[in-house]
Amino acid sequence: MKSILNETTYNKIQERLAKLTENSKPRWGKMDAAQMAWHCQPALNIMLKKDTYGLKPNWFVKLFFKKSMYNDKPWGKNLPTAKVMKATEPRNFNEEIGKLKAVLNELGEQRNKQGWGEHPGFGHFTDEQWGQMQYKHLDHHLRQFGV
Image (cartoon, rainbow, N blue to C red):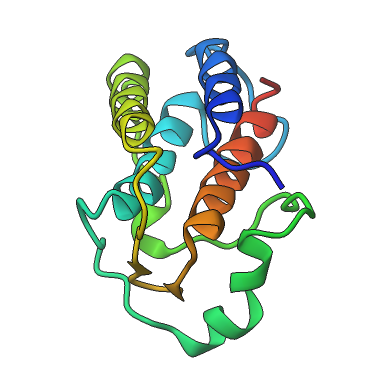
């Protein structure tokens, strides 16, 4: 399973992200490219311990969804998302893509860190699981926009 904490995988995600434009059209879902860039930021900010977004442990989510976060099976289309991470407002593409790249760069600078700790909603992840989950989320949305 690929991990955002792997240098080659991280660089490939950066290359794919650079191909995203304001005019990139989704293959599925309701978000435009700016909203998707906004939506991808919280997961990275959670890993970096910048914010919890008010997420709390949820046994149902942990029991039925957590393992899908870091297995080899790609996520399907139109999956449910936490209410605080739903992109419903219009967003500025250049602003949001800049913020996404900045938080991704910050994560890249810390790739070798050990002990990423707890997720506020899913609980314990190993470092490997954190990296796999972040890759899987970003890959899902980059595929959504064909990059």
